[in-house]
Length: 214
Image (cartoon, rainbow, N blue to C red; front, side, top):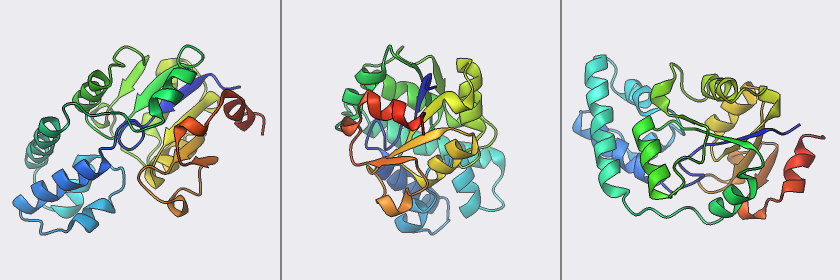
């Protein structure tokens, strides 16, 4: 039985994935990594710190933390007035009040809270988890397991909304159903999801419930 809907944020609620890739590319190159934006985009939805460690081997954890802070300073300054991705709010209001709601994002918690404020949906989620709330980021299932635990529901009672391969892998490893939306990646990268849609506005309650009867 479906009891909870857990959202990814970047690429699901707001169109910020390109901003993440741009910011990371700038910060990494300033730090001497000499990487292209295409290389950075292959990091998928990993946490910034995890991605930076791959390109900046030998850097101390303090250095990595400073670079992550620099990246988010860039993001905060450019994300004022962000609008939701078309279809998100329609789906959000469809499930709000009917299911328990949570967010599990690779972005740091402060940025998650910032986006919730920008979209005027602060307080709508029982659980908000950022990448700095967990020890292992996506594709590890830790974040989704923790969200289910905090919600007081079984993983098998959760539906996850994702837009990336690593996000799908993370949710499936936690034993959850996944709907993937093609906001960031083509369908070919999302085939492990239980359902793929081009817009969350396509989804109706009956379709959600059907996933849990399959």
